[in-house]
Length: 441
Ligand code: HSE
Image 1 (cartoon, protein in one colour):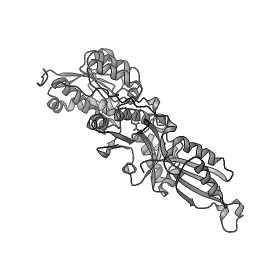
Image 2 (cartoon, rainbow, N blue to C red):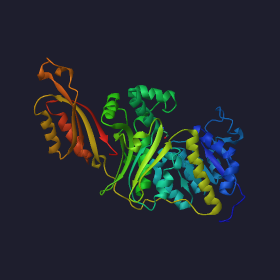
Image 3 (tube, rainbow, N blue to C red):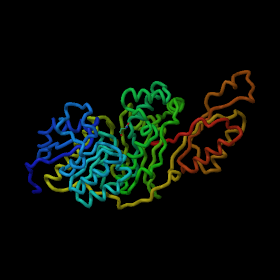
Image 4 (cartoon, rainbow, N blue to C red):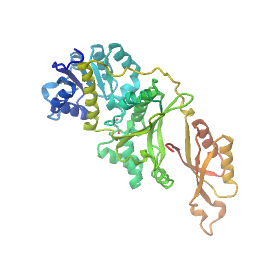
C-alpha cells in the first residue's frame, strides 16, 4: 500500500555483467541491508542475464544467478537494470520490461540518444520510471540535477567534458607533449580507451551524452543525429602547445546552447581559457558546467567511467525507482513540451582562433584583416610570433614568413568557415596551421 513500507522484496533483474554489471551486482548483494533500509523493502537480485555462462567472472556474482534467457528474466522483475550497452537486444528487452510494468534503469547512452521517444512513450504510457543517471558522465550526478533540481529554472547553456578517454589523451598531450597516437596508445594500455578508440576519439560517445543533456536541459527532443560532431583526431601536439602559449587548454566539449533561434548541440575540440573551471579537469575525469538564469554557473565534477563509479549512479537510480514502488509516486515523465527548433551546425555562434603562416611583407596583415571584414567577422586579437628561419639576419627578406594568430569575436560558424576558406586562398598565406574554436570565454 502506498505510504507504507512493504516487506515484500522487490525483484531486480540485471542485464549485462561486464565491468559495471559486476559492480552493480556486488553493490546489491553486499549492500543489501543498507539498501533495504533506504528503500523500505529488500532488493532481491533475481538474475543476471549474460551472453555466455562459461565466461570467467568475479566471484561476487553468484553463478546460480546467471542466465542466458534475458527475455524470461525481465518478465518477472519489478526493476530491470540494463548495463549491456548497444541498441539491440537492449531496446527490445527494455520495451518488454516496461510493457510488463517494470521500472527500468539504464546506463545505455547510445540507446537513449537514438531511441529516446520510443522509450519514453512506452515508460510514460506504462506509468513506470525510466532512469539513466549513469548514461551521462558516469558517477557524476548530472541527469537528476538537470532533470529535477533545475526544473524550475531556465538553462541557457551546458558545456561538458563528458568523455574521459579523450580528456586523458588531451591532458597527456598537454603535459608531456605527446602526439595524439602516442597518448591514445597510453590510454589503451591503461584500459581507458578501447582497442578501437573510434567511439571516444571521434566524439560519438560525447555526442550521445550531449543529446541526452540537451533533451533534458531544453525540454526538447534531441537525438544523436542532431548533434554536430567533430572528434579530436586532427588535434596535434603543436596545437596543444600553442593553446597553452595563449592561455588556453584544448578540451573535447559537448555543448548544448539555447539561443533566440533555437537549440544548438555540438561536440568538438575547443580552446578553453585556463582560468575556466573546465580547464582544471585533468586526466580521465569528467565535468559538466551548466549556466542557468536563476542558479547562475554550476559545476559538476567526478569520475565519468569505471565499474564502481558507474555502478554508484546505477544503484542510486535503483533505490529511487524502488522507493517509488514501495512508497508510491513516480520519477519524472519525459518533458519535451518546448519542442524548440534544432539549429544546423553552421548556425552555431562561436569564436575561432586561427594560426597561419604568411609572407612577411607590408600589407599582408591588412589583406587578411580585409577578408575578415568582408565576411562580417570581427577580430578580437592578432599576434605575430616567431618569424621563420628565413627571416634570420642576412636571409633574403623576400622569403621571410611570419606566424599569425588571429582570434575572432563570436560569429556564425558558417561565416567563420567561409572566412577561413577565403583567407586560405590569399596569395601571401602559405598555410593555415590550425583552426580551433574558443569556448567558455
Ligand atoms: N568511454 C567513455 C569515456 C566512458 O571515455 O568517458 C563511457 O561512456
